[in-house]
Amino acid sequence: MSVSSREERFLASAPDLPPDAQDFAKRYLVLAGAEAVPMLEAFFDKPPYDLMPRVVIADILDAENFTVRYFGTAIVDIVGKDHTGITSQQTRGAGLGQGYANLSWYAVNYPCGYLSRRLIYRQNGPGALEAAFELLTVAVPARRQNGVQCLIQYHSSPHVAAGHQSGN
Image (cartoon, rainbow, N blue to C red; front, side):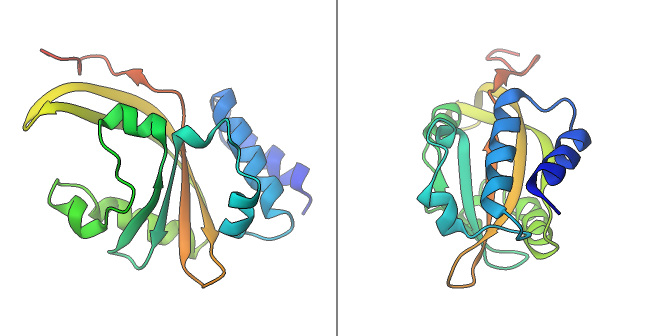
């Protein structure tokens, strides 16, 4: 299957994908070439520098465990904290992690990508919501030379979600 036909199928399956996310998907498919999944090293050899601030990369260790290996600066700005190096065990204490780990495990094992709309919350103190940002996530699998499977997520340009601003 040629990259162009894969690209056409992907874009047809997500007609409302914002242009920046379409650009990310096209670059990913070029890296994959004829393979189902590209090597993560290939991604880092030619990273889409203009898109990297909104990228998150996680090593998916099993259906319950992951480690965030890269947390883009635009996502850091949204959540107010850099999560590079955080593990699934650390995120579970904040009520996160299990659903992400399960979904990611399926994505890297089948292999398939997924699209999701999600809210990312920024707190201005313990238990105090400052804002929630809605964004579209394109998640695609990759693998490393050492055999570890990874998930590369691209988060579209966020906007403040209605009803989730400070004081609401």
